[in-house]
Each structure stands twice: as C-alpha cells, then as structure tokens.
Picture 1 (cartoon, rainbow, N blue to C red):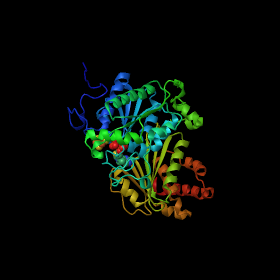
Picture 2: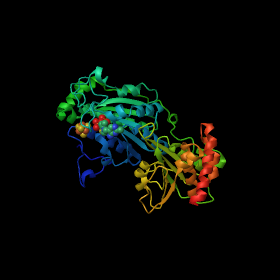
Picture 3: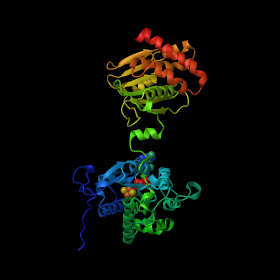
Length: 472
Ligand SMILES: Cc1ncc(C[n+]2csc(CCOP(=O)(O)OP(=O)(O)O)c2C)c(N)n1
Ligand code: SF4
C-alpha cells in the first residue's frame, strides 16, 4: 500500500492568505511545487529539518518560507550565494539551501554563484531553470532558447540580438572546486525520481561538509510558456533537454575529505579580530571613563561641501578615542552640486549596521538636507545648521537647534571649503562626546592634500573661538 503523507519539513497549512490554506500559490503544472516536495522529503530523510535554512529567492518561489517549516532568509535577487556564505561563516552546522531561478542565478546573480562555487562553499544550490522570468510575467531569461518567444523577445530569441542560452551546469562544472554538479529534469516521472536522488545527494554532501553542490533542474512554466501543463512537460523534453543535456557533470562526493573546506573564521573573539587587523592595544581600549550616548549622525550637504571628509574625520576621532565607529557614504547622482550624505555611528558598543535611517544628530550643510532629514531626527536629538546658506529655521520643538554660519566663518579664515571642518569642530564642542584636540591630532593624518592641513587647523581654531563667544 502506498501511503501519501506530507513531509514534516512542510508546514501543515500554508497561512499566506489566511489560516487553513492547503495549496501553494504556484500555477497548475509549475515545477516549483514538485521541487519543493522533493527537497522537503530529502530534509526529512536526512533528518536535518531543525538545522536547515532556506535562502528564499526573488521570483515565483519568493514565498517558499510559507511552505518549508525550516529556518528561512529572504535574499535579494541573485544574492543568495553571498547571503548563504555569510551564514556559513557563523552557523557551522546549518544546512543552507540556495533556491534560485534562472533570472535570479544566471541573470542578476552570476557573480555571486560563480564565486561561491569557486570558493567551494559548503552549500547546496537548487537552480530552477524554466527558461523564462516567471514572476514578472515572462521576459527573456539568460536560459531562454533560440527562437523562444517571450515578452521581451516577441519574435523569438536570436543570437544576434540576445546572445546564446547560458548553460549554468556547464559553467559551474568548469570551476575546479565544486564537489557535485548535476542537471536533471522534471520531464517524466522517471526523471523526477532522478531529480529526487540528485537533490538528496546534494544535501547529503553538505551534511558531510564536502563542499559546493549544484543541481540544475529543468522545470516547466506552463503559464509563461503559454501551454497546458501536459503540453509543457512535452515541450520541456523536446526543446529544453536537447539544449541543456540532462546528466551528471561531476560527483566527487566520495573523494573529498571533510577538512578540505574549512568555513570557520580564523578568529574566535573580538580581541583576535583586532589582532588580525593589526589594531594596537591602545586603540582597543574602548573609552570607559564616561558613558556616551550612541551617536547616529547624518552629515549632509551638497557635493563639494566636504560632508564625506567631515564624516571620515568624525569617525577617525572616535576610533582614536577608543570608541567604535562606522562611516557609510551616500552619493547623489550628480558629480558636483547634487546631494550627498554620510552616515556615521559612534558607540561604546559593537555596531551592528552602519545604516542611519533615524539620526540623533543631523548636520545640515544646506537647505535640502534639512528638508530631507529634519523629520527623521529622534526627539531629543540635535540639529546643527549651516546658517550661512540655510535661511529657514527648524520647525521642531523637540530637538536642540544649533545655528552656525560655517560658510561665512570659513571664508573669514580664507577658504570656504573649510566649512565642513568648522561644522565638525562645532559638533565636537557642542556634544562633548569627543575632545576637540583629538580632531587636531587626526586631521593631519586624514587629509591627503597636505598643503591644506594648516588652513584646516585654523578652521578648528575659528570654530573654538565662535563656540566660546556664541554657543557656550
Ligand atoms: C535586483 C532586482 N532586479 C529585478 C527584480 C525584478 N524581478 C523580480 S522576480 C524577477 C524574475 C524572476 O525570474 P526567475 O529568477 O527566473 O524565477 P521564476 O519567477 O521564473 O521562478 C525579476 C526580474 C528584482 N526584484 N530585484
Ligand atoms: S508563472 Fe511559471 S514559474 Fe511562476 S508559478 Fe506560474 S508556472 Fe510557476
């Protein structure tokens, strides 16, 4: 008697659109559902459900996390191998699956997959080749066949216009490091059984820490191929399989020894990381004497106002004082005159992400910066405004406003471009987070054009003078 049960690696019900749902969102005859089933069964058989993380792609299988009862991480289009690599570094025992379509892996993510394969990452990649962009309505994919009509090749793909269909398994097989490369098909029940075996082997390799395995699976997309499900299976065999031969390209799973792919980082503690990068003992000592409030700074202005350098100097001051700091630039599209901003975080604790969406310090060197970020500043935060060129006043009453005519002061010193240094120095004086003399120390080392060191040092003096007279 054949007993059909749902794999325990699947949820009992799929709650995507409310409770109790029993069916997936895939179209009738789609290959994704079949492949999900084969993966879930292999996870059950290998007994690894509890330590599996599926990297869900962008594409029709974007909702894989509603189906697999495993860990999940949603990756941007094409980036699953990079995300998986990072997870590999921190979860040595996790079974990490990259589930990717052809637009995802062979189009936007070509770089990521090649390098993950080349590094021999201990990962398993399931590459679903349906020769089209499914989710977005049937545009040409890198694997679309010659003559195949898609939304973007309405008269059929041609060599002259679109290049040739890409053989992903062949490309991965040209790289030395992978342990296992196979192309299978969902064309017939027999081929589905072979796909089942390949999927399990590719996962087994990871369980045994043997390295990188990729299974390319030829799968139907009846909707975008504009066919009935049965017709699509037939077309797959008659047209896809001759171009993408179904075969095992490589199976070195018996030959490789476990230790060959060590994915452990060479260090175990923060101390060791600092040693590794040659950070000296003094710098390691995080400022303990006083508690500082974490500074989430947006240093913003137009291109040419030196907001990036201002941010770098601020971060350098922080590390000089033994604090942790990050600096993240964001450039506007124009070379000069466009908006630009730097996000700087200064903290006594480790900094998880360098992104500053909601600053507690806004440095607005021009009007558009104030317009863009004023509302985002935390209540209780500080906004420093270049009052030489920003005529408007801050509308919020729950933040501290500091107006300084930094462009005028810099012109008085002799170089309007020094306004960023005056602003930075004022921030140090107002916040008292770091010592103004630290800026004097790091500035000569941080400025590439040494002829500007002296005048910038004078900017610091000017800021101090102005602060004493007007702001203290
Ligand atoms: C960086 C980025 N570029 C483009 C898109 C738009 N996009 C979403 S799904 C998709 C195509 C997916 O096709 P494929 O990877 O073949 O998966 P399928 O839907 O066929 O399973 C595209 C181009 C996106 N979401 N992100
Ligand atoms: S559009 Fe194609 S790939 Fe997407 S769910 Fe439908 S059949 Fe599957």
